[in-house]
Length: 392
Ligand SMILES: *Cc1c(COP(=O)(O)O)cnc(C)c1O
Image 1 (cartoon, rainbow, N blue to C red):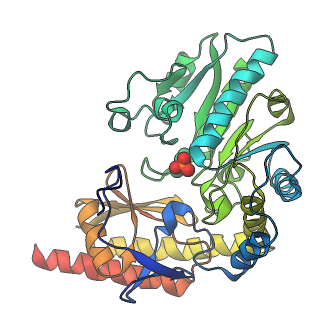
Image 2: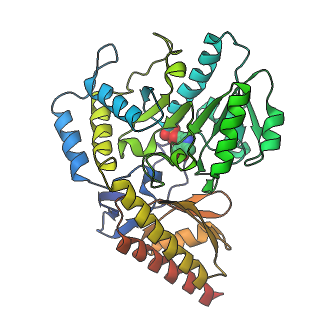
Image 3: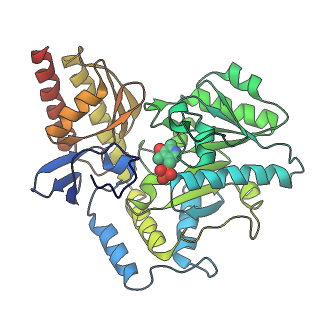
């Protein structure tokens, strides 16, 4: 690896030259089944013709134009996101962490406008991941990610995931909001139960707090709903979205109710690149496909096929795999042996996956994946697990 890069990543000795659907190809033409999908970013797989047409079409007209001017494609994308969710206002940015930074600012600003500037603290949950900026690191409070970056940004109080007693006792007159990923990604594909999300909504309403969902990883169709929170039948006040929204083009968004979004008055926030015409053209093209009638139902069906196929895999190799977590096409394979060893062998055999906490292997295929390609991934993991058992 080049010394010219900061050594922040533990990179595999692999470089891909091109992609097609759920497959990636290296320079030697070797094919890999991509169940990492850029960490849930390539929602429509690689080289999707509709995304290519949108990007190329916009590239010939206008790449960038500042937010000093109207950007019609952005107005259209915001309106479509609002029509398909709880939201009434949208701010566009370029990443998940930025979408959360906007969420934190909107939370503070809302309470300030309400005449309660002392309310600025956000309750967060163990196992959370919200990004790598100072505020998002402070929110997640993962000591490994925070090492060497002290002091933390003030204003975050962490409580145990799925523990309402602890959460209630953390609420003070300074509390402004509760922040949760409806499905924790990095934390090990931990799904917040519908009851838990409903209880969080109720406690927020009781204490006048805002409920903030981080759907950067689990949103945009991955669970079989457009947004994961729909399964619980409760809505947040603020939501951060990114990863799948641009299908590989960097696009993030902070979605809010009108009451919260309108507190972000002129000059209160901004982004040079956020919501530029190229990004908005691609975001609209992603929505064209994902919101097409039948697409999300298909994700649910293929997700059910995947669930059954992976459950059967686990049953065949109980000494290697312990269980399955997740929903739709955001799945986590619990391992009894070090997840990194299985993942390395799978990569060697042509299947790409992502690690998560709690010794879980994340399976995040593009949403366009076919049942036969799920079976192909299972067959690879079957061979990997069998080879391991023979060696033992
Ligand atoms: C990836 C991720 C983020 C951070 O997104 P970036 O684009 O890397 O800043 C935030 N929250 C969740 C749940 C994520 O999965």
